[in-house]
Every structure is written in structure tokens, then in C-alpha cells.
Amino acid sequence: MATVRQFEDLLCWQKARELTREVYRAFNECRDLGFRDQIQRAAVSVMSNIAEGFESGTRQEFLNYLYIAKASAGEVRAQLYAAHDIGYLNIEKFKYLNSLALECSRLIASFIRALKSSDVGGLQLKKEESKQQQERDEFEAYIRKRLEEERAKHP
Image 1 (cartoon, rainbow, N blue to C red):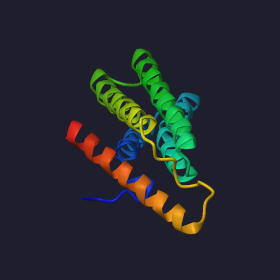
Image 2 (image 1 turned 90 degrees about the vertical axis):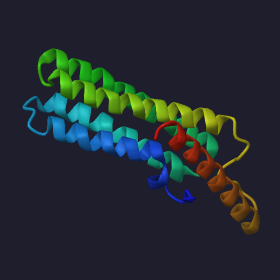
Image 3 (image 1 turned 60 degrees about the vertical axis):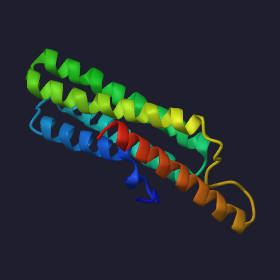
Image 4 (image 1 turned 120 degrees about the horizontal axis):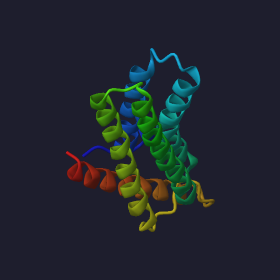
């Protein structure tokens, strides 16, 4: 059983990293620099906001960042449609990238639902050091449990 100690352990972040890598590869040669920059920045935003939210320390902040990450995944999907319509992507590449972006959205949405139903407060609660460590342990156990549930849903 893997312990979630850092954002890199999160399945939704791992999938967002894959999306970012594939978007960069797909548009590396795109001459439309404005479009290329926009879709690449949106993809990076997905993984960056998951990481930033995880590191923020409170559940509410984490949720806010997850919503931003989900919105960025939606932005990537919208831009993929434009890229296909304009002729920057063939149908196979469009379907592949769109499925990655959609999977990111679904994983983030599932994680948001799980986090919202949790009674874990997060890491930045202002209490004595021993209480903070206990809360960290509870938060990590909760995230570990949710990660395992997500992996079971998406093998």
C-alpha cells in the first residue's frame, strides 16, 4: 500500500502529467504560436493546480485548486476541438488527447467528491505540533484510501 506523501502520488496528478506531455508533443511543431502557447499552458495548469492545492495544506484550498485544475482540463478539451476543426490534429490524435483530458476531468471530479465528503481538515490547522502530526497522518490516510479507490475504478 503506497502512502500519499506528495502530490506526485496522486493518480489525478499522474494523469495530468501524461496529458501535459502528450499535448506538448502534439503541438511541438505547430506554427500557430498563440494557439500552441494557450493549449500547452492550459495542460500545464491542470497538473500545476493539483500540485499547488495539495501543497496548500487545507482541504478548502485544495478543493479550490482542484476546481481550477478541472476547469483547465475542460479548456484543453475545448481547444482540442478547435485544433481538430482547424486541421492541426487528425481524428486519431484528437480522440487520444481528448480521452486523456476527459479522464483527467473525471479523476479530479471524483477526487473532489471524495474530499468534500471527508471530515479531514488538512495540514495547516493551527494547533500544537503533536496535533498537527496527527492531522497530517489522518489526511494522508484519507488520500491514500481515495487513491486506492480511484485506481480500482480506473485500472
